Image (cartoon, rainbow, N blue to C red; front, side):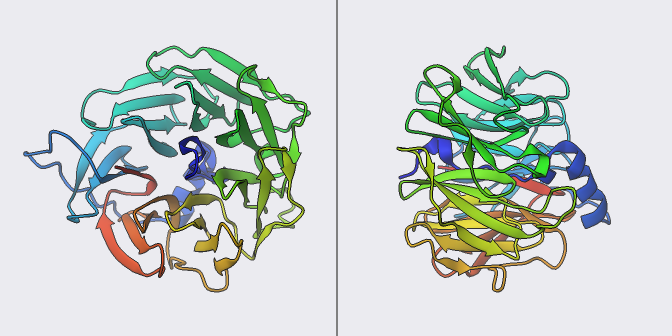
Length: 360
């Protein structure tokens, strides 16, 4: 099973606050549909549910994949929080727009969250969970990595990313006592930083050279899979030439081969129980490959789904099912079969859903 700290972030360079506002303007329009209302007889304990973040209204929608019931959850704060994670009976929500990390009780999520604040303009982006219980957070615009205890409200350790490593840290993954950091350099980068957890410093092996514009990192079949979207440099010469680079975390070497998604802009990723890695991008839709054989099962030429409007943002998986957010004003959470790739269900949520997680 993959390290829980390596579950990939549902994110993309455009998920920085400023570019997300561009998506709002260009991709969607019309009137928002209100999310389902919270029932009066809300469950006292929440289990086996989807937690979806609605970017436009900045609140949760909770959905039960077993019953199909959905209803409105609590407010999160500012608009367009870019990511939600589940860990240790808690829901962690990074809110780039107000530079915070909000920690909800996953079993009673209507309780007021614990809030950790970052410096103004730092743009927190992703987080990973260390084996000692501490949380690591990347900050896209301040070029820093933070390490803190989620039970407190004050940040503790901060590590600056030197120019020799790259810049603009995004996706994080912990493996073999090290923290791996996707350094996108705002679209022109091709490095992954390696941080030793014991010293909280970049290792001598760092940085590792990968494909252009690394976004998300997950661990599967003994390798770190680095999803690289490409195409966000100033010339756009390499637009939609996506790749997945592979790193051996035991030796910190990059495999000479890669998984080719030319013609696509992959940026989101999740590992399903059957060993399929599902990836998605705003223009290329939802695709998949086999983590063991590295065979592309559904690529840019035959995606599982390429929406005719809006885009897919955020991925979650559990028990043979995969879910993605359909980022549009009358938003939906879409469910797919991890084996057959068939679309099984959809759940009405709020406006512009952009992050999702399954809570067991």
